[in-house]
Image: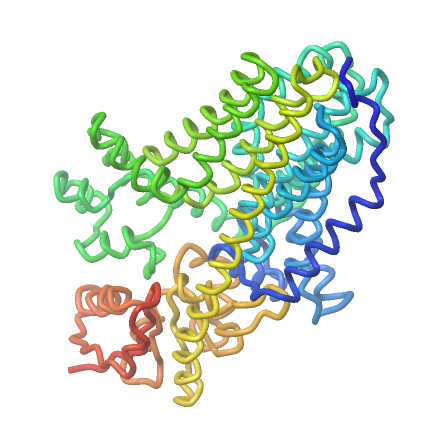
Length: 551
């Protein structure tokens, strides 16, 4: 039995502290969505359209609230903030129940909140989903180790937090399980096996979420059904270098009736301009004849990819995980060292595998390393385990590590806040120029739309202009509604509509060049790119304002 196994922690106090922490960050630092997916999901909800990637049950509920309760409330952002706050409250409560003296537990809880600050000010459904999954599993593990008969309401609450992982991002719960399944089984696998009723209660909210999502999907209209199918196939292209494969196997062109520029459009994922040529059938045929990213990399190529996308961008996380393993080993012995080290290796291994198999591992690397840190602390200092062999040293190491963790987390958050301010200034100056020009329509690159959605609580920027946003959300119900607003019914009408009209393209230079080539090849129209404003240099995705005119 542990030294501090039955420490009482006020749940209301933890909840108030977490809410205050989130509120202070939202008031004092600039806010933004983390990825362009969140901007598109928010726009879908505000427009009353079905959402993608997350559970359609959440999208339908939030759209209902927007249409029938309060249209001016940022329901999607509030949902993500609420889910994130619930996850952080559980993680902080877990830290308060570790095998440490109260001062060390408090220091660790504060450190874990500071480390999560970036997830608050850069709000993203990937991060929220993984953190909710992690929090639910960690909370259940502690509950099973601390109490022989956990209360039903406690298990049900943790099950709800766990289910939020699925509701927020379907794939996010899978990622959270990948990072947390092994630590959970080590901590509480046997106890859960002896308590099937607890397992059933914990999984009840997830089962209800799955059933509700199935019912909503079953009632979806034909356009959204086609879009879901299309987007699932399109998402698999992240794993395939389609342009290189097409050069080696021209039959891909012949089978699909594509030109080389069609392939460039597909590879850039900026525009899919023809529903007849870009559809589930043609994408499936392309996937059958191309090879995944990891094929032929070899050990050296794989390591270069891992080093460039995982190690170089997450050095502080890796160092902290190694330091955590060493500190646990010094304080509690070899078993604790192995437990904390295993969490570090599992996180690093999974992130490295994703770097090889996927194009965008950085989207989940940070919540993955955060989850590994939390699991490592729990493995090393789990309640109900043997007491620390060196209590004072354990307290000293935990407090020192907490200070280091907190400094790293706060520093990273402030650094990102400064970068966001500079980024906004550059992108806002671009769209201030666009507004002065008073275009009929703005066709915008989705990466630019991310930074111009700007504030999750206000929904400013490009969404206030007459626009069509290209990228993965093309062919969605909202995309066709945007076209209908300009008298169009198909994507093939969009680019010809833009020639010799007051239609502006906003995005990186390559974005506009691809569109110009498409018009020349697909429509037999010779067009010239007229640059109106090259934008501010030195910022990511330097937005250029241009238009297309016939020669």
